[in-house]
Amino acid sequence: MKSYEVNFDGLVGPTHNYGGLSYGNVASQSNSQQSSNPKEAALQGLAKMKALMDMGFQQGVLAPQERPDVAALRRLGFAGSDAQVIQQAAKEAMPLLVASCSASSMWVANAATVSPSADTADGRVHFTAANLNCKYHRSIEHPTTSRVLGAMFANPQHFAHHAALPAVAQFGDEGAANHTRFCRAYGEAGVEFFVFGRSAFDTRYPAPQKYPARQTLEASQAVARLHGLREEGVVYAQQNPSVIDQGVFHNDVIAVGNGEVLFYHEDAFLETDKMLAELSSKLAKVGGKFQSVCVPRSAVTVDDAVRSYLFNSQLLSRPDGSMLLIVPEECRSNERVWQYLQGLTGVGGVIREVKVFDLKQSMQNGGGPACLRLRVALNETELAAVNPGVIMTASLYDSLTQWVERHYRDRMTENDLADPQLLLECRAALDELTQILKLGSVYPFQIN
Image 1 (cartoon, rainbow, N blue to C red):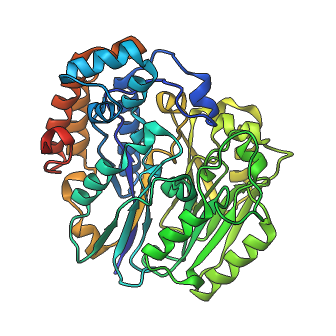
Image 2 (cartoon, rainbow, N blue to C red; image 1 turned 90 degrees about the vertical axis):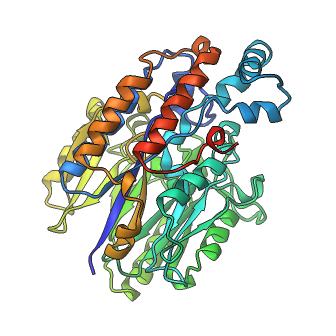
């Protein structure tokens, strides 16, 4: 039976703005308060989805959240009609309104952790929505995320869904941004690689001093238990605390893996040699041959990696066994990074080609190609069980492009977020979107 890695990209929401909400994310903070362009952001994301589909890759789409989140503002004490809640929040607590309007769900690498059926005890694909409790504006996402994933992967014979972990610091979970899977083929048993920033209970593990470590070891272990993963099919690794303090808030800012290959920066991990040996040994037991590609700090500094998002890229397998690296335009703009990539593809290694995409609207808010996609390995039967409305086709691309053109503004500032009309615009857009994607009722305004 054939198997595939399907990339489900997050559709950028209508309230895309630069709120500077993500402490520890250099791009997010440095572009705070700038004017954004939601329409351009959504079209840039759709262009990447269409391009990968045209290259022969399986591509899907994941719907955005309802924003502003008026229910969240009500829980914080704002009252009255929806319009009054928004106006009161704008007047008394603008940062809370900005947080309730965040379009950060576009970065669906943080939506959930996914384990394919070949790895799990019950032979189903398992999803655990990420609690994202480190940042308020993201911590409010998981209820809708769970409903959307449930509508996309609805057949209980093939798919199992778990609620987010307890929303406390000890179980901070950022989803697939800190999770990679290595395998010989997508439909075969593999090794799941969980990267954590700190331990909540074991003081032997060091922690960063400046920025928070968002993923805990205990959260990663809990997800592995929920998914029924075998001990011999899991490797845990600690992110280097010093790179977290340099702006590497997720592992996918400093490393990316696919198939049998890990592409990583020299400073990405602690006890790197021990971790690589464990990955190699465990992958060999299921018939795989692990390969690592280390980018030396002498060629690309951590600062270069953070500014260019070299590692926040998509590493995709081609039919001939070679790999394609999808990077943002910022990689070409960084002389050292681009020089390294030219050399990488010129030596005849496993990464043979680099393709560049303009994702400026997302990049300025701190998310690159890898942030924008949730990877789901599926066999033919499971792929056939996925809601067909969310699988990208030329027709769906045209429909979504026209939908964006109808509903999205081309400029968004903090003042625009205080406009009660924006909520009505967003709800009208999302109501239509659920019909296009055949999701049913997944948003609070459709349910309540």
